[in-house]
Length: 165
Ligand code: FES
Image (tube, rainbow, N blue to C red; front, side, top):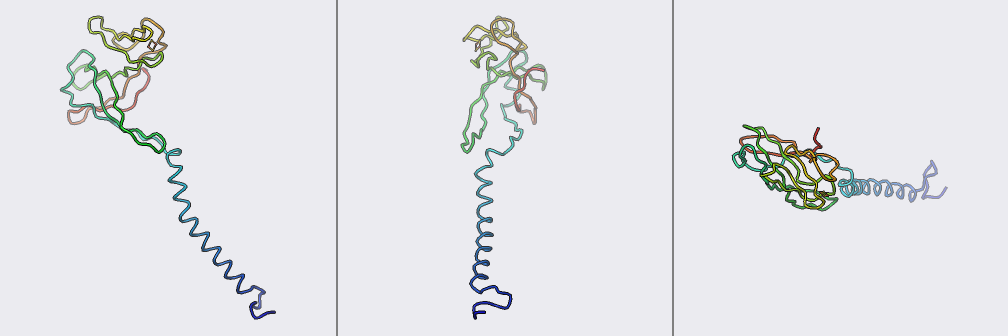
């Protein structure tokens, strides 16, 4: 037995090497696990439901759909950007609202409300939707999407779009 080896046969050099490897592993885990989590979080993260303010309810007269724009922040992978979104807001009465996405359900062009005809028209391929957003002519396969809506402190908020149920 050399003077570098104890009674169990473990050399001092081998023991120190093991300790250094263990400490290195702990340090690598402490640094690496959060870093990997940060890098992968946009891919693994869940989208939480968010509400976006459109404005005071007094901005919207009862009856006719009114074009409004709100801003929202969207995360696309690691990029965060501001997006301006158009919607048609129709005040039914009091604090009851129906909010339509103006995105045509055929290929996504912007529909326009025609007050005289009381219909939404799509300029791209001539789809026509009635005042409830139901397609009545042209190639659109389904009604205009609607936003979930809530009113708080006299202000209108929109959630996510959902197909008309
Ligand atoms: Fe609207 Fe085609 S995109 S009819």
